[in-house]
Image: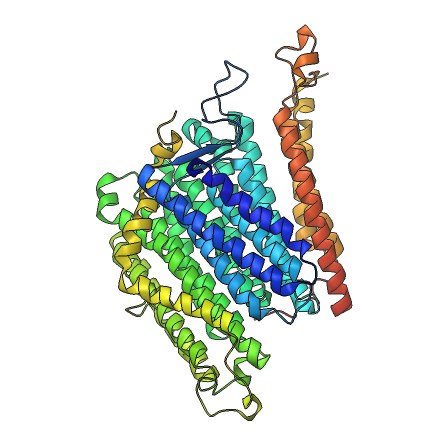
Amino acid sequence: MMEHLPALMIAVPLFGAFTAPLFKKHYREVSIWTIIITGITVVLSLLLAKEVVTGGIMVYVFGADKPTLVLPSGYSVPIRIMFEVDAMSVFMAISATLMSFIGALYSYSHVERETGLEKYYALLMLLEVGILGMVLTGDLFNLFVFLEIAGIAGSALVGFRNYRGEASEAGIKYLMVSSVASLMVLFAVGILYGQYGNLNLAYIAKNVSFNMVDMIALGLLFTSFAMKCGAVPMHYWVPDAYTEVPAGINPPLLVATYASLYALFRVSFTLFANVVIDLARVGWIMSILGVLTMFIGVTMALVQKDVKRLMSYHAISQTGYMLLGVGVGLTVLHDPSKLAEFGRDAMAGGVFHIINHIIYKSLLLMTAGALFYVTGTRNLNEMGGLARKMPITAISFMVGAAAISGLPPFNGFASKLLIYETSYRLNPLLTVFAMVTSVLTLASFVKVFASAFLGPPLEKFENTREVPKPMIIAMVILAALCILFGLFPNLVLDKLVYPAVDALINFAQYHSWGGLA
Amino acid sequence: MNGSIFVNLPFIVVAVLLALGFYTIGFKRNLIKVVIGVEILEGAVNMFIVALGYVKGGYAPIYTQAPPEAAGKMVLPTPQALTLTSIVIGVAVSALMLAFAVNIYKHYGTLDVTKIRRLRG
């Protein structure tokens, strides 16, 4: 049973996705069905995490019991599709399943007035399949397929409110970006296949020679994944997509974005890790891209009036922190003393920031969705005095805003402090930008809080009430996680983040399929 | 027949198609044409992958029915499998993009990408 966990992680939500359309017009039932399925995948991912953290890398080969078994006999390269699950994959898988569950729970009430919900939930689970496939697979072509699945499901969900023209506009933008990015990934996969005659990540990584053509492949992969994770200058699709998507889809869509970030890390750490000379340069590019992303994101957020759009620009800005943290680590990957001194902690900060950001940004976007649910508008100038009417939403928002600004004792503080401390060792200027960004973030969230929740009660919101229970539960769970991760960061750092970082650093382990080859 | 140019001809076509695709996506104003641009890109990538596996004068990779002289001269089957998968995905992508285009035309009354700009800021 345990050894089949990687396959079950895909099979269960896929089964859910294909059965969901059968619940035609039974909207209550289909949402409960989705909550059950996503709940099961949360349990599966936790089991998988336990297996991987205690037992090391898990390799699941489709159609054989170990990767070294090849047919026809005498053939010595891996030919089957395989899933290779290390601590980093598991870390992302937990984020994905948790956020899909929260999203399904929140959607139960949030989209109840819409029609066509059986398709909505089918797409939600398909998006989850795409993300899980991307983070678990050990095969480059498989990565492309799951990238496209996540892209198609994600953009269909962005355009879900098809009675609004803006939703279709955002949807086609997202689909255009993701399909061009995936096609370029496929092109790079073709280049690598043409040279090494194989699609297995570990096998190619062992043989990579880094000639001119490989450099083109690395460049294509790097740009495509950076494009899909919303790094500057390809960030323009992020605010549109995050604004137009129903708030219940925001959590899984965020994870889908960070699954591309994961792929970026996988490419630069695992696929090209043997290339000693140029890796520091790639690390510097990643760090500078991170700083630019965080700064440009936050300055554009400051001027927004649409509450979800403002938060989406902050999502861009926070992606910069992750790029910075992991980029600093990548710069010193081949320098053992510096790596032990600050590189490992920098990467831990970047990786920890992924889950922290997913939690608090989902929380914030969901409170924005709650505001939209009761007021019917997203314009900050038309809101006011809602704290009295919606106390729980207001408190959740405060927790999320404090976390994103990096105030102790919330989770944003824990990971940002790690990034500040370590990027300072590489170059103090990087830290200065990171801290200024944090201050600007706080400023813009104070503005949102003041204009939406404080002030005199407006007459038109006389009869508004707190949002329904499922939405409250989803928000409270995330708010509780924010505080929990902030108060006891070591719990998560030791159990999940440092194993994930070590999995990225010890690439030789990944290359040998955890010692099997 | 002089070898090098004809051997590399598919790759030259791929390069031309890639340039054409990016040009169409970047500079055409009609949304349908932009969708066509994505399709051209996809064609370029698919052709690249198929061309990688092609052996001139090669045999179909069916082991049980191959004549003895086919050994070592078979066309690589994997790229063709990859391309089939990629074509299927491409159909889904273009269908969805065209559906979005239809919906955009309904709400905006135009397909001009410079006018479809209600989301800004």
